[in-house]
Image 1 (cartoon, helix red, strand yellow):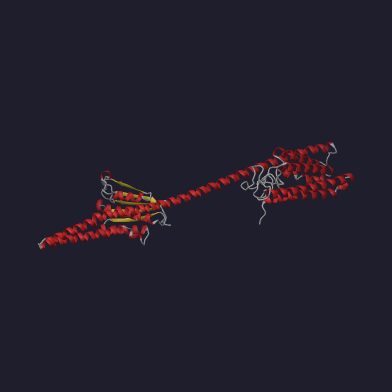
Image 2 (cartoon, one colour; image 1 turned 120 degrees about the horizontal axis):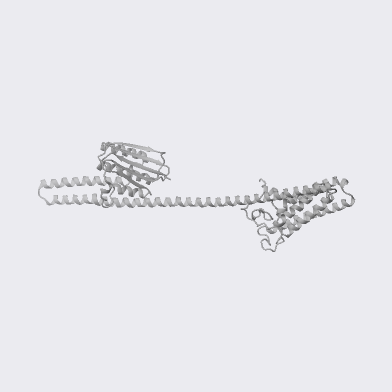
Length: 470
């Protein structure tokens, strides 16, 4: 498993002080004969042991703090554990902020540090223990650098963790104190031995202080930007989740509307069929019964034959009406063909039967349609062509099916005599005609428009949403 940057920094802050103290001790011991006397050697050794003891004590404190901050550990979050009110655990530099979205992330500028890093517990703010550790370590490093400038190697750790071990108001003070130790080491040791050394010390201190403060400020700003980016990403994720939920709700609503449209269409077809049975079959059977009653009541054979012929004619007519009603229950043409294929055949059959030149055209990219959409457009086309046959006296007609992205349009045009729409009375009972076409389209959230005028032909356009067949 790859090690994250935060984990690398945690390892550095855990073992870095030991490593830097060891390196400084090794180099300082190698140069001790040149810059230290016997008393200074003894004092330096004592200070090194004290610094080592301090690091060991701080490590023990960190482990106890971590144990107290872990979920389920006695005293965690209650203020009664061994780490109650103590400092944060292993810090992470401001330039490498932890995930602000993770549990335990702190405010911008002081990101997710402390014993809870990676444990889910909140990271405590710098406390007395961390301040005391930083001050003691800085004092020991200063004293060691006073005895041997090479111990500035150990002192430089203060540049990295002052922002996290000290409260915000003391962090820059810690950086400046560290800069004093570093400048003294770089200028030849503390105290400066000559005026030149003092001048060098002043310049190096100014340089070290400026660099420390500037980089600390940049790190804080970078942490704030990282927190803002994380907050933006979180908000975008929430927005995407809400959008996905809205899309799912819209899909469900569309399915419900389609189901309602189907049920409404079934109810309309039932009412239409009932009306046709009443107006055709029932009336035809009534007429047949009346004619047969006349036949049985009349002694005149000639008159009986006339009424028998009328009864037969009524029976044939009623049979034709029954067949037509059954065919209108569902578009048989769509059982084994797509909508464009069914329309093409319908237009060709209509042209052959009426003798009117007719042309069918498809525009756009053909897509599979829901059965309800295909059936509706086919019925509208059949009714528009039937109206043209009965009323227009046209010599040419055209049918165009257009796929237009999220909707589909059917246009039926003829060059007939046209009419004044305002002068056409509404048919009793709704009928088929233009009102029936509009009702069919509106059930699918579509619409039908009419363009016509006396002597200028007729154009009917049906537009419905493009619903795919799932």
